[in-house]
Image (cartoon, rainbow, N blue to C red; front, side):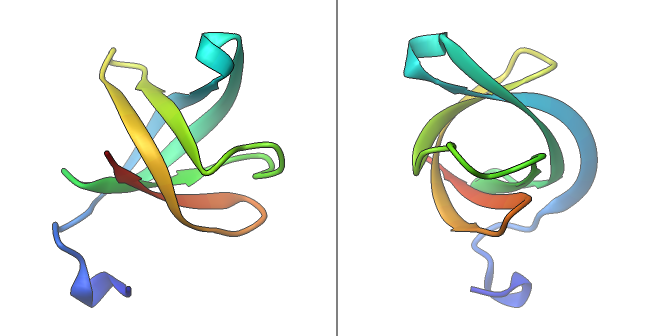
Length: 81
């Protein structure tokens, strides 16, 4: 799905967040590069070890359950569940 076919418009952003797995025992720092009501693009140091489904906790306290839509070595596109 390219940007022209998105269900919701994404807004460019630069927010800090954490990917949360293993019931909160493991976290990965990430940066949210764009955000919509239905998903986000995350920038990570490495996508290795990050599962298909995980929690996302934003610096402002918002939390989302996520499912990976696509990934590269350093970016992950997610859908909010």
